[in-house]
Amino acid sequence: MFKVKTYNKISDKGLSRFDENYVVSSESDAPDAYILRSHKLHEEAVPASLLAVARAGAGVNNVPVESYSQQGIVAFNTPGANANAVKELVLAGMLLASRDIMGGRDFANSQTQMTDAAEMGKLMEAEKKRFAGNELTGKTLGIVGLGAIGSMVADVALALGMNVAGYDPALSVDAAWRLPGAVERKENLANLLAASDYVTLHVPAIEPTKGMINSASLASAKEGLVLLNFAREAIVDTAAVLAALDSGKLKKYVCDFPEPAVINRSDVIALPHIGASTAEAEENCAVMAANQLRDYLENGNIVNSVNFPLTTMGAVQGHRLTFSNNNVSGVLGNVLSIFKEFNVNVLDMVNKSRGDIAYSIIDIAEAPSSEVIEAVKAVEHVIRVRCLSA
Image 1 (tube, rainbow, N blue to C red):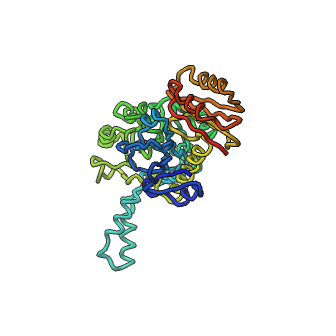
Image 2: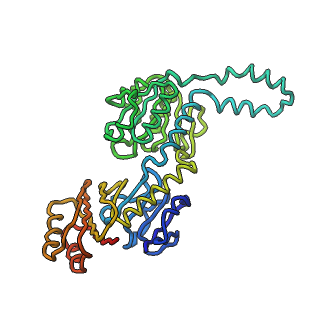
Image 3: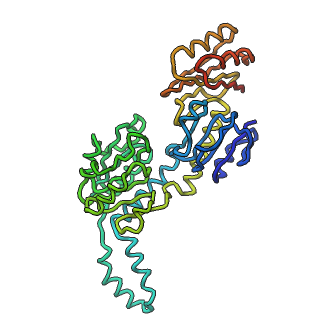
């Protein structure tokens, strides 16, 4: 029986993935796993029982990933599960920035003193030129980050008749396959900013991307650029953006991360971090998070971890031993030497590494004895050992 502790409100559709072999509660003691959305875990005491944490979302800023790695705790996220929700909000942001929709709405709603429909109609016709804008068709959209969200934004922009350029220094093979062929690849951020009428950001907040939109990069931007940030606030230097707005280099800034400096500016559209706030996205994230936790807890498989390598070997058929270790030479060999000493027959195995962490899944013919398990645990650099049976 596994125990899963919940934080935040997790979609019932996701929680229903846990069957009768699970106890799921916000009050679980000695939990095997956590599932959460925005709850911050950095100050939380870590129970010795904790094996894994699943964040029902893409970002893991609220999870102490490095500390968990050192304790053999696998941290999962759900990349792509909320991509469509963010894509649709990016489209809405471009439309709001290209035409003064909000200004027109506010003007119409302000005419509370008028009671004659014909008179109001004449006023609307006379004043509508104040809220004129531009069409998206024929404009160039630059996308920084061509992963799950970026590629979907590219699709919808092309369908609207926009030209699309992309920049991603870490483009994976899988992401490249998803990318529409009509997207023009740019070699650097400066070239992308110079060629684009709109630029949307879809990169994680990691050290190389922090403050990537700054005074130096914005100097390359096309005059009148519209900048959209539905990724992370740390990617943008707000002071540099405000200076670019004041100078006219930027026409609009659309962001999902309001802060005091951008509030009540006519050239800023600030939203309260609602990029993934749809019922569908919350369900998709919860289902993916729950499925990944189950596969790890029951089978030892790791998919979509942010700190452990992708490692899978199907469902447990008989007996399986998994272990994580510091990624140094000799550890796997020492474990296999123990198996030889105790006559443990290895049927199949996979060993993967990621940064400072290595992880192995080993199927064996019979359940390992307590002596074998303790011997593996005692191997230098081994962090955590688990035994699983069908």
